[in-house]
Picture 1 (cartoon, helix red, strand yellow):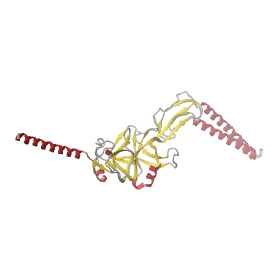
Picture 2 (cartoon, helix red, strand yellow; picture 1 turned 45 degrees about the vertical axis):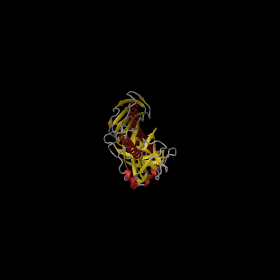
Picture 3 (tube, helix red, strand yellow; picture 1 turned 90 degrees about the vertical axis):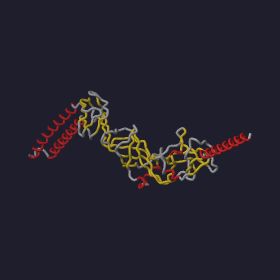
Picture 4 (cartoon, one colour; picture 1 turned 30 degrees about the vertical axis):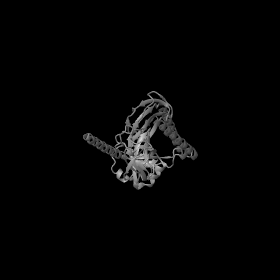
Length: 360
């Protein structure tokens, strides 16, 4: 009987010790890391949807009416300035030139006769002047006929690449009809829109942004290997969108970029007094970002936030948080809304210097 009492006492002691150990572990496991947003001066890279345009892009149109007699180039071909691209049947304009030249020759002979007679006082000087005027008019007609004839031969105004050629040999071409387009792709423009606050930050924080260099992210997710530079900013804001257009120029020695292409301009934007939090302190629901805010009673509440920009392991907060609030740093997937928690506060400056982990 005495041995049984001792054995029971030992069991009770072991049980109590185990309970205390489990309670201690539970208390320890329920203690979560908490921090606060931190205010810093920084810069972040933001992407802007861009339209890529050739540095020169023009439509090649017929200047005279006629049948398309020759096509000397093919679609996608590179051409040189002055190279002949098309010829519109020139017979009519050749005939007009011959006629104008004949009339000029007759006017020249008439002037010679009038000059000889005027020198002998057979005719007045006025008749000589009239003959001179007729010759000048005839020479003008010759020049005009030559110009019309030259319009039947369409040449490239600059080095570039030929676009689609909609008309085929023998087609009847009207004056002003589109024959093709010509693009100079040696350098490319990228146009993108910037909001008014970002424009003001960009213009007033020249020291913070360092320089005007930008990058271009292509449609396949690859970044163009050549840096561009912001050259110009338009003079007016769009009243409907509140944006203003920027233009960046990119070198294109490989001719990778084409007129009409799309991409994203990556531009470094300066930020003063930016409110940042660790990315791992957030979670997403239906493409919206949330944090868990800890109130004065140690209760956890979910809060929707909007993000202005992204830094390595950090989010720049636009709305939803203030610098004096506490947010859950670890365990965002373990704690539910309105849970009461035990926490240990971690200095936010220390937190952001050791960030390499995702949310737990």
